[in-house]
Length: 425
Image (cartoon, rainbow, N blue to C red; front, side, top):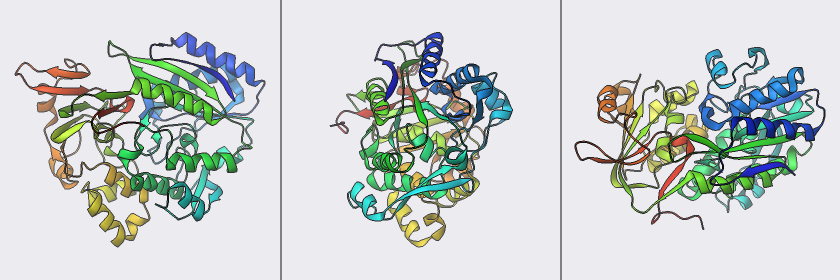
């Protein structure tokens, strides 16, 4: 059922309109006494989910008893990050998701069914895992909040990904990421209908149908002035709410280009991007637009690690972004990679496969560290002087020296592709 829907390519919802929509929809749901909110963490700062969570706290008061940020494999939020994203919400409501330990398997998709869903690519069983608070917290309402936008693993982010990955366990996360990598990032980006999503939808339909889950989904994009605006808000408890949000996201977050891009400069907000695990959205979201032998330059003032998780960080440093064939070879030979399939998937997703160069300009990593993982390195202050984000506009730019670049201020809000390389049909 869809409880509320609004949005179009020209819609720009105000903060008050969003608040009113949240309040009116919660009125429809009736009286609730034990509410769990599952919003994203600081890595989705621009999703609008922080403000929505604040509205939910204002609406429910003491009935909102738990807030579980959907960390997935990310590091827990700091108190400063909580204050920035969820202004005015008490810290004692927040719980920390432990993806390695604090989960329960709520059902298992048999290997033959996984094989059927993935067209024979994968034939091992898949465990549907959730944080114990989600499946055993005794809540009479679970509000899963987040942004629908093109995504490298799920095709389109959010909906039940927020639960099965955001509050999922290591085995479920690892194997879902690996399925996406094997299926191929170029075959999955921007597509709401794909094998990974089909697996999650099967799990929703068969394993958590009795949980009182309602999804609150936003669609956010840049307007013509380069400002983030909320183009859509969709609230409901069925797959249709996701499908409507995904349809709108493709209209406003998908940038189809007439020519491949020879030089792209991406800026990573230091409040949101501290690792390449997250910052490589600069790679994922532009790879379909990059020209052969092109150059991707990533300005990353907040970058200080490779993985959000210590073990995954170690594996990235050890194996590096060396391309799919070498990663698969290492996977065949090394048990530690087989035990961390999401890391292996990330290594494959994050390589240009030699087609274009990737240059990182980090705020806190050394030249040796960057080159160790097979990326090029450039000095951040020098590159910020040459490519000043304050002077650049999203899209094509001609610099004073005549150089032509394509600038992206936030890779998390879109998908860029060359028309000749990509279509959604």
